[in-house]
Length: 160
Ligand SMILES: [Zn+2]
View 1 (cartoon, protein in one colour):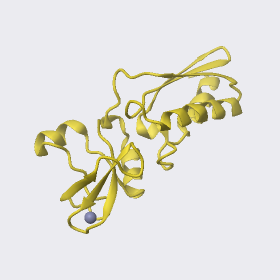
View 2 (cartoon, protein in one colour; view 1 turned 30 degrees about the vertical axis):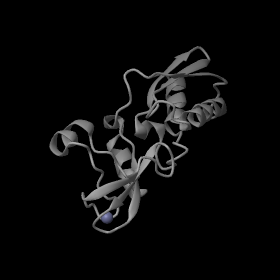
View 3 (cartoon, rainbow, N blue to C red; view 1 turned 60 degrees about the horizontal axis):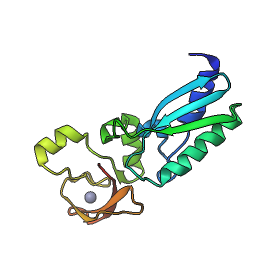
View 4 (spheres, rainbow, N blue to C red; view 1 turned 135 degrees about the horizontal axis):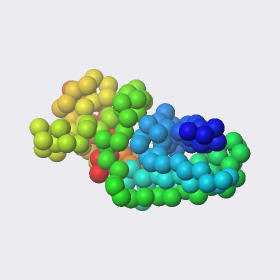
């Protein structure tokens, strides 16, 4: 890896999700690729779901941090294939989400096979007996749930 690429990568990897500021786009698995051609940088991102409004903010943040480390020419490319899955969320990302009070999604395949529709575990007490109250939580990227054990409502990261 060249110095320039390392510098660009470090800057872009530190960009956080505007809705979940404890998570970087690297944690989320939203950051797919960084390429440098001369002085211009091309960054490829995959939104967590189609039409996620946070992506516009993220693209602007990427341009800002890259300009700050010496890359004024930036192209942010959004790719929808392959589609983002919750499996792209890193282990670090899962831990940070839970610590932030948002139920991290279970890895898609295993959980669904066992329980049918995946139900998020309560981020406060860990209980699996939870119910969905609303498809939309505090933002469109999250859904609202309630824990039947501790009675607390909580946001869960949406699985698509
Ligand atoms: Zn609970």
